[in-house]
Length: 219
Image 1 (cartoon, one colour):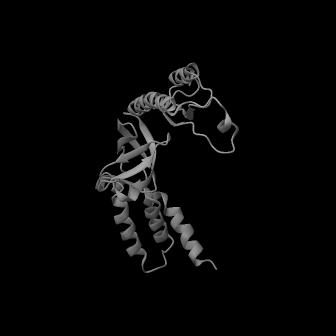
Image 2 (cartoon, helix red, strand yellow; image 1 turned 90 degrees about the vertical axis):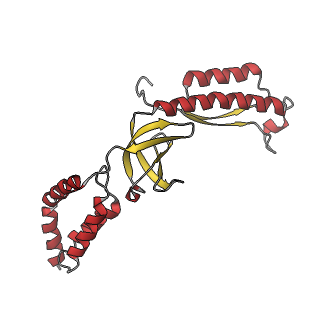
Image 3 (spheres, helix red, strand yellow; image 1 turned 60 degrees about the vertical axis):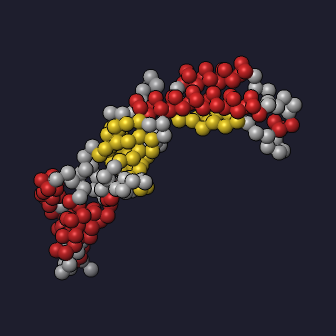
């Protein structure tokens, strides 16, 4: 953490292994308090046929294992909520990989693999990596908002633009540009932002146009 303060720790824990004493279990809790986990998976030990541990005589009663698991998960849950809430106000890149339950809601993953959902999400963000400002942290997820709508254009929109550029000799070029323009408008905060980007793109793509025309005219 001295080298990377924003690092997040995750782990797996099994409680109630044969021979585990209350002192052993308290040592586990002490370690968890010292480390501070952003997320963790936890289970109680259960015998597996053919394993050495399954034949050991000092098996723990089921009620002891369940009690320890409950105490362990309570501590881990507190740490996870604290970590998620501490993310509020941060800006994170989020990869949107699925649609949410609500209308126009998208869900993605943060760099820490937290679920992040945003409302009123433009559909073109699906499958994109987008900068998101985290507004709230909950036990199992984060809620955020787009920092800027124009953070990323979709691969589909960019592909449509390039297709139009590479189709300069085609009579459909104007139609393709119009379709690409309509698709791209939704990625910007307002018409002025899109107009500024379009002017910049036109200037930067002039050499690409010439190279594309040359490619189309070459054998």
